Amino acid sequence: MRTIAMLTMAAVLTAPGVAGAAGSADKAQAKASTKAEATAAGGAQVKSPSTPPAQDPASSEAASSAQAVGAAQGSVDAQAQADAEAKIEARKSLERIKQRGAKVSAEARAKAESKLKVVATRTSEEAARNGSATVAARLAAEFGMSADQLTAEHQALGCSWGELMIAHSLDANTTTEVTVAQLFELRKEGTGWGQIAAGLGLKLGEVVSAVQAEGRVAAGLAKPDGKVAVIRGDGTRASVGAGAAASAAVPAGGASATAQTGVGVGVKIKP
Image 1 (cartoon, rainbow, N blue to C red):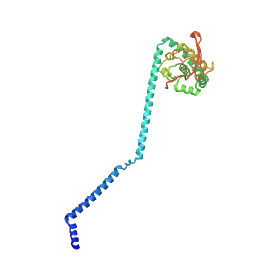
Image 2: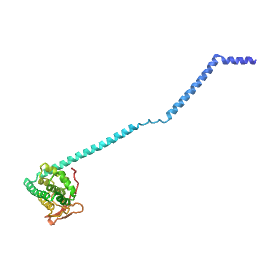
Image 3: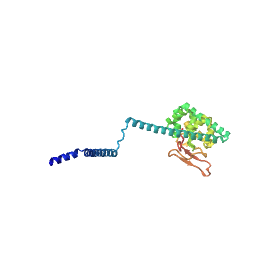
Image 4: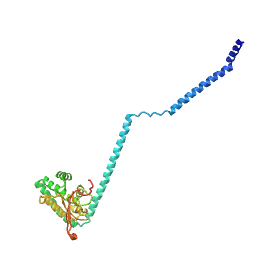
């Protein structure tokens, strides 16, 4: 009996249907296991943080260099534009001086220019006799500059000592935003000192008197005191002195005034 039972069980196990079912079950279990492993691996891959690609040091340096060049170029362009705009405004200012000065009678301008020319010539002759260094030292002390600065300006502008003295006398008194160098731009264009002075809003009679006073300083006939002879007019800075030096006294009625004003007061447009 026991032998028959074992044979019967073996027959059952080796029967085609039972064997196929067992094989299918094993395959299904293996497939499910494989799928589960793949899903787990995929999930782990998705959840793992991505690693950024390594940057090329050469590319990074090139990018930084390009940015620096771009910033520098932008700064240069901005400065160039600012300089161009400043030149345009300076030119407009010079044109206004010419136009305003031209409204003063030609006779008054010619008379003032004739007297100014005499003083300028004498100053240049003084420099020729006693040396440019002597005249430079005297006028520099009067205009609040060093002798070296005034000498360098004289050489750069290529003007006479007399004309440089006139220019500084006007520049020290006017409130118009203009420089000595720009005044000489007008001179090179043929504009006379009388027209320039009138265009700056200065009274021509007082311009002549002030320049004559500075001419005495240049000649050594008066000591420089760091105060440029004052010139009145609607465009003057009368009573304003350079540094702490300033003095002004106007008698009752305003008939006359004694005031001294120095150089370098106010805002100037750079040449």
